[in-house]
Image (cartoon, rainbow, N blue to C red):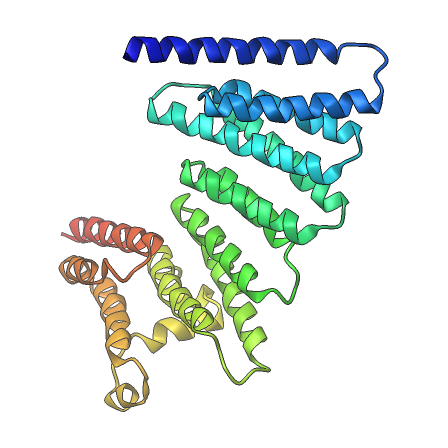
Length: 322
């Protein structure tokens, strides 16, 4: 039964491929009227769906690319963008499948997918639909991030920041947090620090004229504070070269005055930050390791990476001192 099913699938795929070739040949006519282009477009869509159902993704993606070209000739930008986006997602799906099988595709699928996304983003930007272009850039960045292409992902997140409407605080914050994540994992600590400063300024400016702050923005400020402290401790910049804000932040968590503990809203969190700063100052790797185990589930992925890097640095310095 299995052999028969495989044979049937192969025959169905061969038939679909023959149809694909026939449609392509029909497009080689020198003079073609628009109704014929529309017919070819419909055939490519229909064939693409059939090939996908047969599991022939590589052939199906070609159908959507050619359908996008037909849409372009017909002047249908909405259809072109839709077909390009579909083709892009299929190209990246093929790339992920190659990665899982440990087969090198020389990133040709990824390159083709990025090209389709970029063309769709360009069409949206030209059409004045910057909000949709921004969302597509973020979508591409997230896909690349998931595939481990962090520098490429960062580039698309940065492009998205230029497209966000000034009043769309939520998207601005989401994208900048992703930029910070990328810069942390590529060890661009100063770049990550700059991004965090931008985030804090953005949120403070937005909330200055408002009485209430959303929980997401409040959580983001706490994320910025913790991540900034970890980055400052890792960079170990001389205090005289720190900005006033960074210097004040480190000084705030360098001691534990009793009267201040009564005033803070989250004394446990405050003490944890003090422990991190003081343990680093005294080259106490054991305390930092204990804190890492305690905080692992509540820290973000990049914060855990930063704390692990800080522990490694403190251990190295301790060995040198010995």
